[in-house]
Structures are given as structure tokens and as C-alpha cells.
Length: 241
Image 1: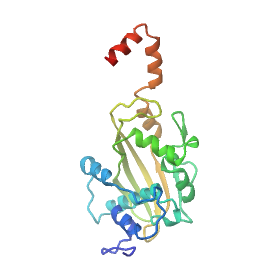
Image 2: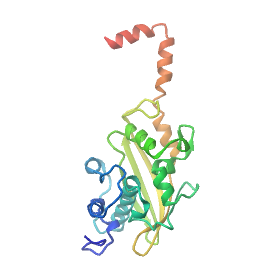
Image 3: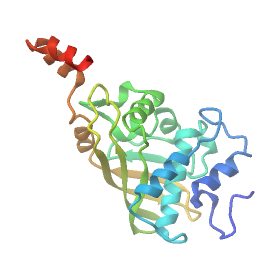
Image 4: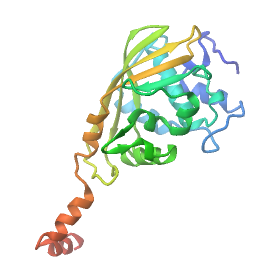
């Protein structure tokens, strides 16, 4: 299999499954030893996606590129094997903050680069593995991404997107609300003639995102309040019965 397909588009802007199939025969250094399985993600997208872009549209091409990029960052440990970026030039930033190289992004993970430090999330204290564990536990059914709209085409691709997930797992001690939590953001990707990413800038309100993840209240605070209540012991017995 070559790095282009029958429609002459580069592999990295094809469907993500095509990239994974190609990578299976390319001696890729996978983070977990095996290529990822996106079957659950595809099921979620089929049921909950709001946008259905035509196969050869610019929207679908950009969506495929970003999904491939996200897959490579998450699962390919060697940035030199990422097909979607210009490895030695690539930079990424969030909300006008510091720029990270491909190597730094691969080591820190997308969550830590996107979220930075705040009251309810300290990216400087999290590893790639711990950050993924936090958000995979918070959104046990997945946290899909899809493109909403493209505002400008190459070489400076500006687009709007959304992430969403069902908040059904604890977030850092805060109780789940069961709410569907959505992030809507914008990004600017500078790309080459063959659509590899040179740089990417993301813009979204991470404070609003964290506000939703802490809306259920701290579970330890609730336990302490119950223990101080004169009827707390009786209520606990009632719950157990």
C-alpha cells in the first residue's frame, strides 16, 4: 500500500482506518504494543454526530487530517513516524500559549498541552498516562471529535470543531452529573502543499469545560458534610439497607 490512494489524496487525509491499516505493515512503535481500535468511537459518531460532510469535501479532508493527527499523537510513540505533520518544523499551541514541538507533544499528551494549569487541572503535575486515565474515566463512553465548519482553505486552514462526551465517571473527586459535556473551539492549521501540518493553534474555553466537570460537587466534601449531620449515621444505614 502506498502513501496515496486511488483518489490521489495523501494517505494522512484519508479515513483514519486507512492510515491504521497502512501503519500495521510499517513497523510502527505503538504506545500499547498494538494499533488502536476505534470501533467504539465509530459507533458513537454514527449515533451522535451532528455533521455529515461529503467524502471529497474540504470539510471531510480536514476532519480526516485532524483525526489522523490525534491518533498518531495518542498511539504512535515515535513522532518521526507521524505521517500527518512536518516533524522537524511542527509546533502546536493553545489559546495563544507556549508552543510545543512534536516530541514534547508526544511526551506530554494532547490533554496536558490543551488544558495547561488551572485550579481544577494541573497539566504540569500530570503525565501522558495519568491525563488519559483521568479523561477516559470521566467519559467512559468516549470523547469524540468532529469538524463543524471550515472557514478558509490551505495553506492556513481555519476551522470550527466540537468535542463531546457523557459525564458518567468521577472527575478528580468530583461527582459525575450524567450531562453531555461539549467543547466548541476553533483552530488554525498551517499546512504544506501535500497537506501535512506545519503548525496548529487551538482556541477554546477550557475554564467552561472544567466548570462543567466540577458542577457535581466534590464527593469528599459531601461525605464530610454527611458525617457531621446528626442524622448522617442513620442515613448511611438507610442507604445500605
